[in-house]
Length: 67
Image (cartoon, rainbow, N blue to C red; front, side, top):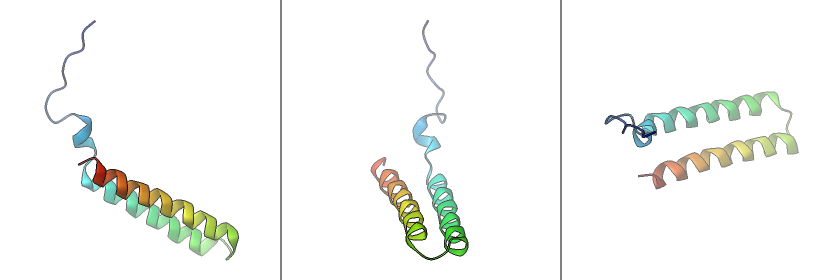
């Protein structure tokens, strides 16, 4: 069975648009805000914020590397 080539404009590179990066970063910022407001100060809140910041950094680095 042979696969047909995808028509232009439907590839993976177009799906990774800059708008998706900003939406993901905005959602992460909202999660950081919620964690900051709802979790008591301490090690747990710091750990949650650090993990979410690491995801944000990963999004920024992979988005710039894929260009």
